[in-house]
Image 1 (cartoon, rainbow, N blue to C red):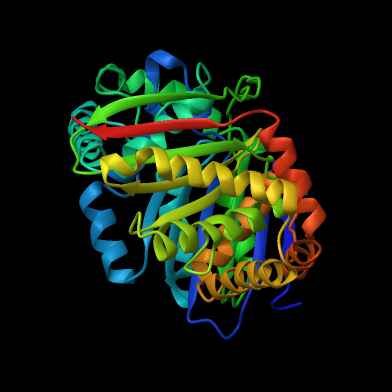
Image 2: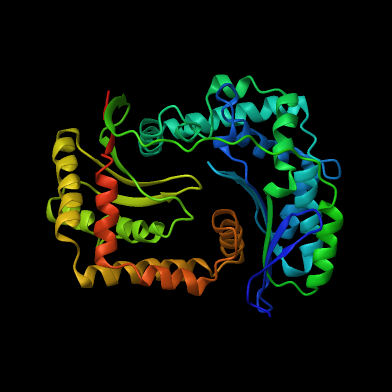
Length: 408
């Protein structure tokens, strides 16, 4: 039925999520691979992100210039992203150009050239990306909180790697790592938008992806949450800080309670911490909280920045609010407002075929099935005050991770 997402499995085991929307002018196609930065060896940290970049440097059928010309002509989005848990390659194009869009995306995925001269150029691009990140204290402190609480685990390392590890990668290293991507069990194809001939699309995909000879990635133990406090100096006029709590992994229904809790704490101008830290005390310009739900673990992260002499009071008020919610709970009004905000944000995000495609792919990755939108909204609605307090009690029993960047 049009509009209802469904799953199809190709003959080689590749899973395909399809959502046909006949009223859409675009179609978004993605190839998600269950290989991310957590699957790297320490001495090659950053190789997943580097490989993602290299796939856009040309393939057997489309050299770099031809790729740029065709994708610009399509007028859509053609990009990739590297995550802790996965890598996603995607293209959005007018619905009547789905066939050529599929050809391009599959060819860069299956048959990248990985030329040595292109690799050296891309290494320099990523080093510039590292420098750009280092110019943002917010990004630096958010990376460092992960290295603190997941110390010693690949999830605690930067997705970009280090300059040393990236420069050490060879074309042979990329070819070896690409073998993990070509394991059919690791691949999810997701498509959303107008698909006029669904059977023809699936046959085309089957022909393109039918022959894959990849290998299974090695298993890695989940990280242990390490509470503690660490400070570092960084060029800035403000102090930037993160406070982190262990939350729940993405497949766990506790994930919904943590999503609502993050919204309550720092999800907008009506949130508790925004009201307390900015509107009542004038201590900061912004404060935010987000729940990071991954395959093996989760983290609720609170971020803010202020004048250096406000550091201690900021931390004190954040911890005070966490304890208050744990012991006294939340009001019915703020709970309902937070749930409505979260549900409406999800609904508004689905205006785009690209967002819908991504949602389907992540549903198969983290839940092993397509979770219908209605189910997600119902799960959020079922979050009550007791589950918020229980979630926070679970987290506070493990302690807090705190990372602070202060001006040099």
